[in-house]
Image 1 (cartoon, rainbow, N blue to C red):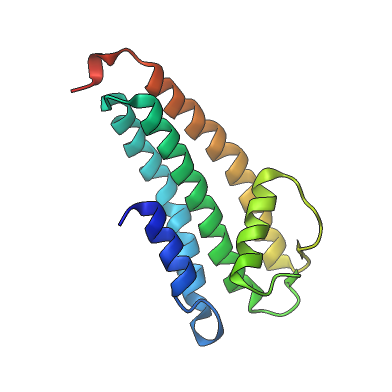
Image 2 (image 1 turned 120 degrees about the horizontal axis):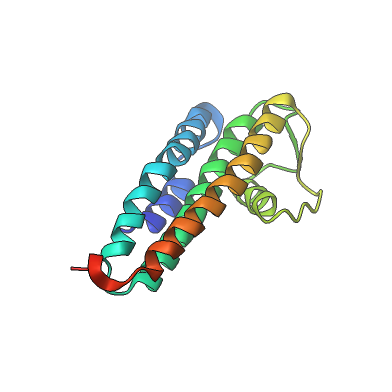
Length: 151
């Protein structure tokens, strides 16, 4: 099972609410902690790939997926405390909110009102802007390198 499918499976199948709310926090923080080392390994893989553009695109999609599912799971854990979010009741709500925040669309139908929620959203904005810019730069640079590194 690939990383992307594994993230979707964990997010959709594990009990992230009720008595198991803490799983959302662990999965969310784990996914977010794994992004930097994952990106570094993928840069090396792109440099060695016979299809570097494809490998870079795949890596960017996986980094974005890790951000979305990681923050979605974290938002579910935070939402267990009433008054943290308005409109965030389901897994789809949490994923949707992470996607809307990542895209900077901000429809306003789901929004953070509690201090924990606002701290998590602030962290997502900073991480999204920084990590995506750096990951895209590193991965596209690696994809453009001459084939000397490729085996």
